[in-house]
Figure 1 (cartoon, rainbow, N blue to C red):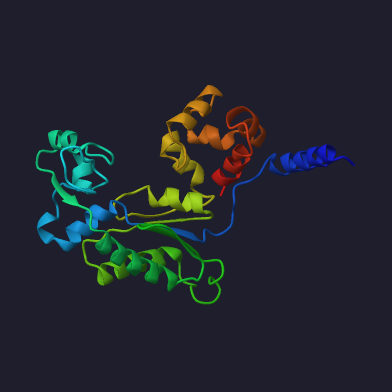
Figure 2: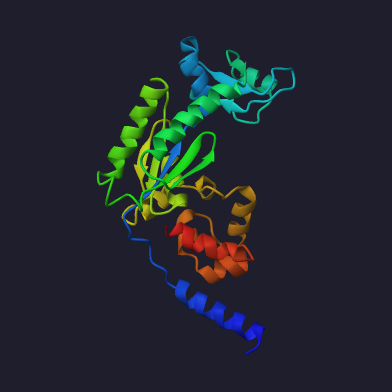
Length: 260
């Protein structure tokens, strides 16, 4: 049999397997931890006088510098990451701008990583302010309590280890994508679970660009093929996503990712 025929048979089998892939009914055992607005929040923790104030962080304060992190108070006024300092000051005249302090942030990162690794050996630190815990290997031995309780425990441990101003977003889901999505539902300091029971309801409350990994250019691709909402994205076939939207196996990956 020629290589091309083998590949075609493999593709046909794969398409048949994904034809009507159900939602993942497994117990959600992936937890995403996110110190959202981390740098600004850490500065507020270190400097009590800044708590409750609009705070921005930049690499180096200068006329042309830009915001690399903004506190929730600053975000509420319209300050966004990537915004120039002068524009930010026009929007929020009382914005207090600080230069970044990497050793301080690394200290908090170490505390977070240590706490996360105390629950499972399967931890992936995605960046200095977020990570993922996979509970599959410890569920029947060390961590039999509900993951929501563990999430609340992690929140409290971060407050104890770093300070009471630390706010931690926790998301729980059957895969990393849905866990991250859950962690972004109620900021700051939220704790949410996405499972097969509420997945469609949550998608129904979101825009396409609310999905991690779907920026404007991917939204345009989806819109061009008649997909305008996360529910329509979920209901699209694997074949449509691979051939019409993404023109690659990326479409098949999205088909599976959306289902957990």
